[in-house]
Image (cartoon, rainbow, N blue to C red):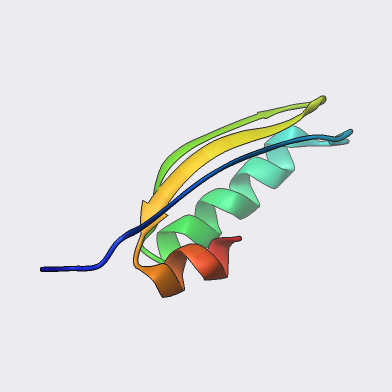
Length: 60
């Protein structure tokens, strides 16, 4: 049985360029075999991601 870690988080903060941050987060998730939903807006981030404990910690 594989171990998975699920992380759900949000933060209200000003994000200057959500599209640029999205690309960076997506690359990091792919490199660490982490899957989930990441919602970005100029007002902040809301996300639930899952993967190996090490992969999720690397993304966070």
